[in-house]
Length: 421
Image (tube, rainbow, N blue to C red; front, side):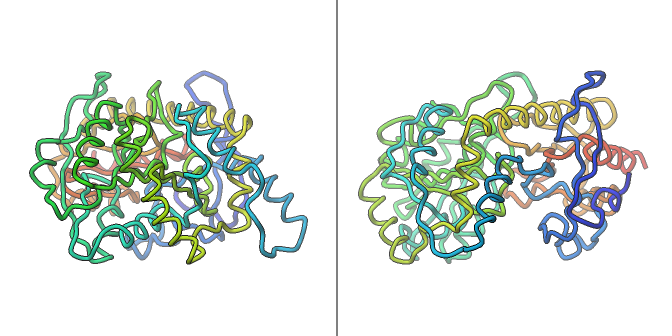
């Protein structure tokens, strides 16, 4: 199998029947290899620009190579049959359905008045920065972390304060993970710090932050008048028996200093249909932010966003979600087993949530440019390099494993051969 076979000529599907486990005999829709060529997808279209080679196997940007589930596609098709796409209102029951999903999955009772549509989570972060952080004030992030947490404040001319995460042993014995450094946070957070951006669950390492950690963070930020933006886009993708804890749910102080951003886009692979929402329990923060969004019509979704969201947050969506997560878990176990057997110098950190695996490549002894050269020029793979995520990311690569097993196997075999050579 080569890249050209994987990313073929048209946006139709071909079947690649590969079982979820060796000898299981189970065939799943997640095994289908989907050609995305001709669809304008980011994952393939910018390879030449970003990696210098258009013919790489792309396992970088955080969307899935699985088909969007049919019940979402059917809901969109049904609306398309009425060929008049004028101004629309929010469908009845939209916020009730989202609130019900959050309560049933995360034990957080959200009031409908707390919620509004936002035009994307990174966009929401930028909007909140401009609303709540003055030009001479600061934003705290905790690297290694999703790089727009750094780029968005900097692009809006706000100073970024860094509180790096600390590497620690994984609580279930699966290698390593991260914890927050509260001692350092107390040192770096001065009176000019007005916002902290939290990745919950964490990207790139997939940490489901504990209630104890989040409660401590809330106490710290609330008492210093720091607003916490909690990006919870991976909240519905907890793995291996782990659970997601919404930041705002852990205490009254958390609720009163928080802005939570969420979306069904990662879980149901609809990132191209902007479906993000904001949740703000504090009336003062909510009124200030939402009135500004409303004045600029930034709280109005596109026609298809509510349709896709309501189709996702159903019992049918729940059944599909569970099947997808089982496949993701099996892919993670496949990566762990393959690396342990064939590439022992690379140690995958097991994520507690999401379809992103943090590959610890430090035992290879390569610097940043050598590591990128190994993956891109020798293995012909496109991943996100760890330094992109800031301090602590050196020597790591982020691997997107939300792809058919055949593609994942091809990628790991390319990497093994490149290292062996």
